[in-house]
Image 1 (cartoon, rainbow, N blue to C red):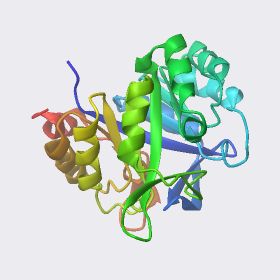
Image 2: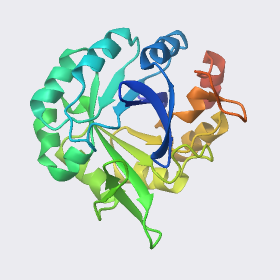
Image 3: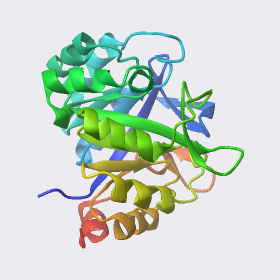
Amino acid sequence: MLKSRIIPCLLIRDKGLVKTKNFKSFKYIGDPINAIRIFNEKEADELIVLDIDATTKGLNPDFSIIKKIAPECRMPLCYGGGVKTVEQAEYIISLGVEKVAVSAAFIANPDLVTEISSKIGSQSVVVVLDVKKNFFGNYEVYTHNGTVRTKKTPIELAKLAVKLGAGEVVINSIDLDGSMSGYDLVLAKNLRDAVNVPISIMGGAGNLNDMRSLFNTCGVVGAIAGSLFVFKGALKAVLINYPSGVEKDSLVENN
């Protein structure tokens, strides 16, 4: 039976761990391997690692860092960044990664999702949609770290992704990234109602009550957070953290 998941997200830039706000203001926060080891100890449900430089710089996946990260993870791992071919996806899976995320490559070539899922299984294919409101206040998907418009809505692209074989859809709010002001529950509910595969929501989590609100609104869903799990206190000191077993159980008890 599917259960709600609480998922740390690690952003990789120049092989280091960074945090952003609205996909800008990059702040270096340490070594990703150290963070992974702490999340192992905290028994995180899952981990998503995104190389945020790969697409914008036209790079391929950084297999060298994947080879370091994958053996360290004792939880299911999703990796995204620069994946453009079936062969790349297959190789990433062979390194011990459970899921491969695609974003800009899916927008450019939607059939890539079908091709990858036919090789590694739909359960291992995740489509990540970076979303912000446009000038008219409507949700729109952007790529390349929020710099390139697609003129497509997240719901239409989510439905297409699932139709073509994606096993999970992740919505990442650019507007709320790093704000720690709460998830976009309207967008989350719209996505939950639109597709019948597992979904995860990212952008805006500032405390555990934000996750509780997400679970209460959407039922079974993945709650992804970055700042919440790497910063502590009003001054945002870097401190890797994750809910204890009791805290986590209280969040998902009704799901």
